[in-house]
Image (cartoon, rainbow, N blue to C red; front, side, top):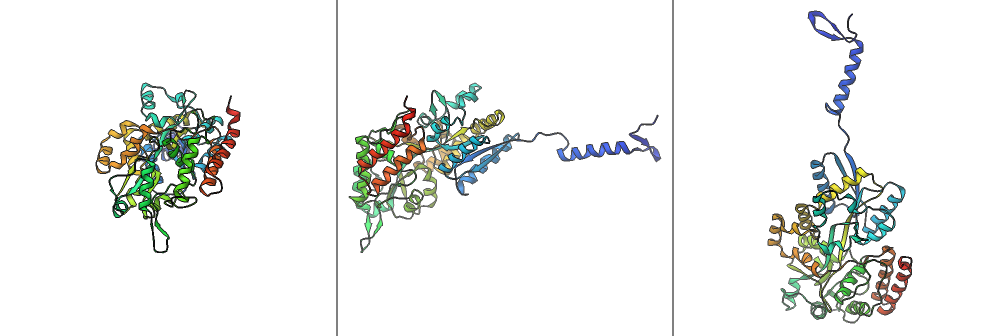
Length: 445
């Protein structure tokens, strides 16, 4: 009986009869689409990254994602540029509550308690499975982990981390007859230098301020740069108690207020966070306090020789740590959580942590990153790149509490009231303390 699939044509050549033709045509189409073999679609993971516009940081992040995908073809990483840190945490919590969270996000390290309270994230301890995983978890700078730990578990992994640095214009120092190699070591020295560096035109209009400390958005963080130097901790490690009205904190705020209102060496009112780097680069201020995350920007754009130093202290020196951690979201599938964990391990490997630090000015978050050949070459050419890391030895955790957005908003409002003259520093901080105490009362068990 002849086969229904094939027949013999002229010259003995085989030809497909109709049923066979249909079958093999379908097979051909499948092979054409799949490239000759069935291949599973890559598992896609999204992660929120806090930047509002495109630019150098997005290019670096996009480059990391593309490089990771080449090495891990079964995973596709989709960065979502989610706006400011404040916008990003709001979007992340909303996405979590709606049941469609990202697999991971870079959010402020200080958002940790709020994320835990919302049951939005999983501790990394649940994903640690091998001895290599345990070594990786122990590789990060201990000072950066203070904003990652709660209840004996690790909730965040340092990535985009920083300290506050003093930047000074060496050319401005030289023009004022000051030693450009010696920045101020304490606040009184900073004030003395600022008096000599503040320059006005013939009409009394200031052309160059001696010192500038930004006071919008992250004013609480800058304030910590003053209180840590005064030996004051504004909150307890559990994030349930604040001490905004401590006498030492009031004294520190009075010093900040006096720079503008009494000493006239600092711009009055509120100094915008986003304008501060450009003010320094343009020569409108001779010294400024800024995040170490601005180091790459200043290095690439300043037309004068500059230096960076640890913050001038009061009774001691010190800076809060700052910046963003990686978090993994509870609502993601187990496969997505594992893929996100793989990506986070990959992007925080020593060589990539070094590349990120060199490109941005953020601190390379693990000690072995500072021993890579690329980092050694960078520091040989630009020793200032190590100052933020060196300051970690005297740093403290950034202000982080339960309901952190509301608590820092209360403190920021108090600082604004004092810096604009609406209230005295004592009135402003007492009001902020009363408000924060009411916010945190449910957590004081």
